[in-house]
Length: 407
Ligand code: HEM
Image (tube, rainbow, N blue to C red; front, side):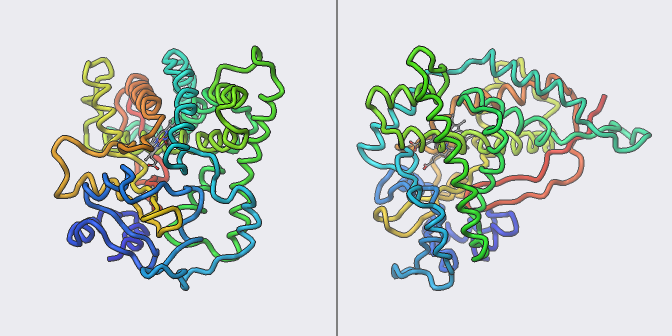
């Protein structure tokens, strides 16, 4: 089975033994991409040895190559895509796509903006509490008579709580206005479908998808322009405010402020929501949910370990050899299950290396607050039905997290 086939059926793990049997690296001719699935190869690539960051907004299929470096003839690219992306092509200025000293310099300022906003756990708790209170309104009956042992009401925790709460938190930290916030989910989905699909999008749909994606960039430009119209004293103390201030102090150019805001809109939302959904689902289905105690001293560590194991980001792109080299996908889960993995040192959801996730602490605190909040508010809940599990080359998702409320 090829990697693409395994991804198509939602079970990339079926491919992992194949990559291990080939020394941890296989060139996939269908994708035109090197697949790195051993622990050591994954660490090398993420650590920058012989690999560079990918300008991650650039879809792999735009530059897909054959093993001898020729353009992949099996993939037809509509030239209007390049017009639609315009100067955005290449994602200039966002740290996720930079390397070397430029990356280090910009990362210092993006990191400082995130850390200045810090871990305001009181606000996290308030936002989560507000969303939890709405859960009851969203519950729907599944029959007039209670089923044996199962409550008569069900609710989709992903749609009714985890995603909206993650979005509220993101909007609060970045200072996103309501109209922009409403677009984040669609833009995130558009990015995934455009950039990471297992199959290139249909030729005629490609330019429209590119335009959808660039739409969020326009929102980011407008927000930065609004902040630019404020005095230093008026600038809000959110991440956008700190990025704009770094721009005023000459540490970042305006397009870098916009590109990093755009990066944070996408980096911080569906990654957290998807990981927390997958972990909650696993806790419920394995029967570990009822034993979970949010007041126990080991609870925070349990959530952190679980988020590493059930990360929604299972693959990450790199360029092999140089900025125009072929794409390589680091298979994070495969590396963590590989025979050469070092005992006790798994790759975390934010793998080590120069691009280590800057939102790690935020994401873990959010997971602790959300899962703890759900456990306290709903007590015993049970999985209801079987969600569809989907995956592309980067993210694993499930259609819903429907649970029956047992009261
Ligand atoms: C469970 C949730 C999350 C997961 C699974 C995740 C995953 C990742 C991964 C795999 C990378 C590395 C990309 C690479 O190697 O090229 C990364 C980088 C990054 N993440 Fe996260 N992330 C999460 C949450 C967040 C949050 C909440 C934020 C913002 C507050 C954030 C901001 C970033 C940034 C800015 C980078 C780029 C770092 C750089 O290139 O130097 N992430 N994340």
